[in-house]
Length: 147
Length: 77
Image (cartoon, rainbow over all chains, first blue to last red; front, side):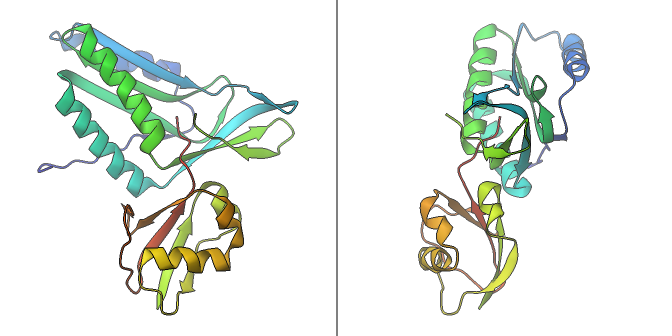
């Protein structure tokens, strides 16, 4: 980890569909790419004990999360021949139906992009110090647990 | 000795960020016992420590003014 440059993956609030579209558009000049893979996480209106989830409020321990993210990113770049990889995770209150996670990988051929995207999503859910507080329509809450 | 504790997620609901005197405690294994005496709710929760922004994976020495994060299971994404 010589030229260590820590990228910030966190955005305040929801991830706008227009931002995602723009990210895709930015890759048209990278003509060595033959395949993109995208994962988007959306806040689900779960129903728990008769109460519906209205929103999830995300918080993080940022220094540790960014450090960990850097480590995962390096490992994935090492493992797969990727052209690029972008990750954005929301912080703050994200309402049901809104996008809270955007993972975007690109490679010359489809397989590495697909596999790297999937591995990134699994790893960040398991390893990043981020917490989701599920806020119900009646303003009570419970803490989300990743399965 | 005094250290700073910061907590996250559901743990932040009953452990506020604060400086605490940990008396003669000098490592994270013993600190766990100390904290569970101060905050009995911790006993019912799975959690991890980070010491000065490093995830604690094995018992680690603690020094004056260290920053200890107490973190419940992660649930991002």
